[in-house]
Length: 199
Image (cartoon, rainbow, N blue to C red):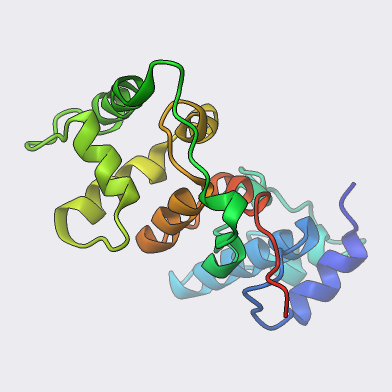
């Protein structure tokens, strides 16, 4: 259950950015409401008429009109993954190929290419897309291709990157970092595998 008092406190006093901390639901909700308020002001709207920020119940409390969110703030949020060093652990570098070996891994990446890059003038083969995902650096077209796939990937296919794609967790985390993807479902998925480095 959402703690409204925490949301209100975080709305007015957000914590400083910390790349090593995963924000709470309350923080994401407060951040989303601040973004909505700011966007309204920037477009010349009326935050009071739209019941945004302190003008709505969520932040303003009793006596204010209801705050209406059309999406779940924790799903809409943009989150950075934990630092790449948190994935640089021997167990996170392990790759497990599917039962069909490298051919099955290429077939899986071919399905990602067909599913997410359909209509692309130079759609990569499964083998080429897998190489892009494994690259230590990305730029130009390869960066664009990997970014597009990660930006659109289904939750089920995130797990399949490991089971069927034969990638390591480190390679997936690195691809997410290189493409600067902040999709909350992707970020939360990869962050569950992070291990804080020993100081």
